[in-house]
Length: 129
Image (cartoon, rainbow, N blue to C red):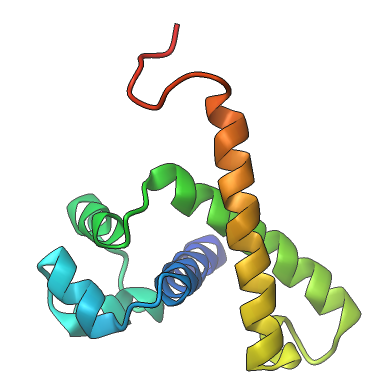
């Protein structure tokens, strides 16, 4: 099914971008998460869908949460569509590594801003009312 393939690819790219933005190698992320390094690679390349427990460990290792992941996936999908329209061949790869890094850095800043908006004035550890 195309939808599953697209989801796996999107999740993998997002995990890789977030890991790189945090400045971690696959080995360091795996060590911090308590999983094998080849598993991180398999998740990032979309070969395997991580179980929720494995995904939570990776996010913890990157000091991120599910909200960061979901927002990042949406932002990267949007950016890839915009870039695809502006530059052929396809997608982020057409821009080159430096430009992709800058786009991702800006997206990460945007994630922080969106996260703050979603929390409003409420403290993170307070329950929603």
